[in-house]
Image (cartoon, rainbow, N blue to C red; front, side, top):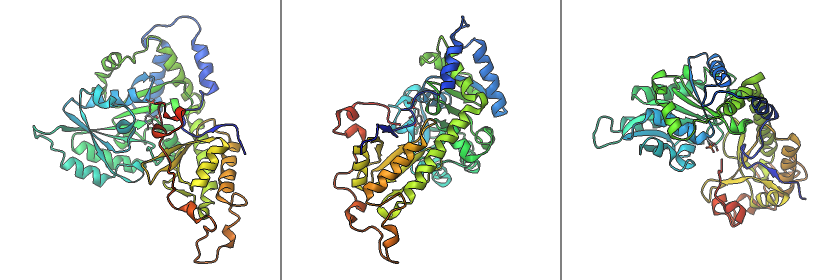
Length: 402
Ligand SMILES: Cc1ncc(COP(=O)(O)O)c(C=O)c1O
């Protein structure tokens, strides 16, 4: 069965929200002061101050990479180190921008379940970080992603624990919030509680993945750290002359809680998919990370992976072989019917009669319910290939994968 291509590759494969396009059209009337001196940008700054209940410095930029790299450059000297998870976007997917923008500073990569930093791991790394030793690069920042690259969410108490450790070692805490809205609706707390009240010093506040065309905001809660960012942003080519168009996107993103509504929808679609696929666990389909935002990481038997791809569902393989899994990402515009179709087709390819798994009821206690297709549950003979190594010429083209 062919479905029209249904793209779960990422939340940045979808378009921009109509509200944001309308705001861009509205901002297109008449002239406005350039380089961020326009009234819309001033209004945006005030809105972020209200939203975060804090005197926050706001720097709109066009990409998450720029937001992250500029945040880190503001608090990490060329001889400094940023501690982050080894799966962090800043470590894996920014082509060395954080190191470049901070003049050659290092990233120190840490382990942790679900791409989360663990307080103990961070404390140990910082304790042996060589602070004050002239031969060693100096600990300067800790960066974490909220939600993480594995779709997990830090609770405010977890953020606070990491912030305390970071600050005790005179490091700043940066949050890559490309999916901050998705994390926040899961937490159900205020933006302040998920940021500065928990000790966050700088936040890359994402919008592109959740409905903007191309807009992110650097939010700095410590005025001293904000002092150089304006210059750094200009030097990096992210001081847009027609800044009002970035600000218009972010302004519309905050209007009527669009950012939260969009994130709630994306998360609901991920939960719906997770519930449907979890019901197929007796057929060798397994979620490998908790689904706490809008990403799923799923172990799929090879016939299921292959069958879904043949049907027209797009999703990336994730992680090194032989542990490669499928990553499926939902977005603000994901259709529930497409989620249901994927679940039904996964069930079909796994050999079930329906989404609940026709075989499940037939297994006897103590017997594996995976029957007739045992190979499907074992590591596949033709494991997933990362898009970068794929034989498909289209997928071999270099492109953003997250
Ligand atoms: C965790 C994370 N951070 C940051 C980004 C922003 O990246 P970009 O520079 O492509 O906007 C992404 C996007 O894929 C991401 O997944």
